[in-house]
Image 1 (cartoon, rainbow, N blue to C red):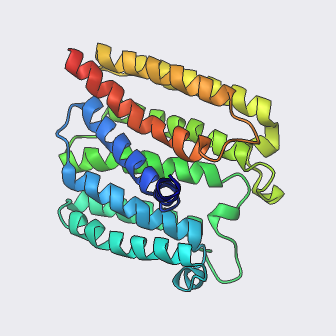
Image 2: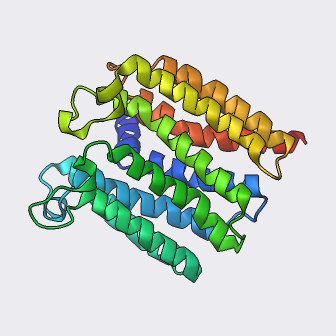
Length: 274
């Protein structure tokens, strides 16, 4: 039992779960836009997310990342290093437009972790910017990349999907913001620090309703998408309502980050049911 717990903790700490969540959202984009499932992109997203997230979590400064002291962090570092190679292997199978988009999003991610210039702060530490940078990167990564890889033109429905994805990631991050409210530096000016926990929950509910409502603004929308959006909203709102400063260890890190994976399952089941 203890071994299983250790493996599960490593699964979360090494960002494997968040890698699956990112891949799941790319899968969702393919299903909603009715474009072929791009397995090379899914593989690239999974492994590159592991590398990127572990760099941000365990090595805000490159020097620190290369020289870690704890044995546990060394294992995660080794896992990240090994994940880099399949990420590159999958990346070479992607087209030029995807490469350019990845470069732009990667640059934004690096600026999130590394200061612009020596003696300055990174975007992660700029008041109020943290959550929006993450949402923008996730929206671009999980919507634009599959669109560009499939050669689909960026029309109205794609724009709506980008906005929806930004809102969804923003809502998913609110429980993390609530959890970290007392440990985050006051200078970060996170949403709960500014407006409090209760108003943050209300904001999350409003954003969730807006996410669902935007589905009806698409030019082309099928019944399954409407049902899946409503079901997803029905999952998000209770999750927000039970979000507190003192959470169980796995509430945000596992259950909240499982929602994109659950969304895929909902869409697949609806698709099978016809």
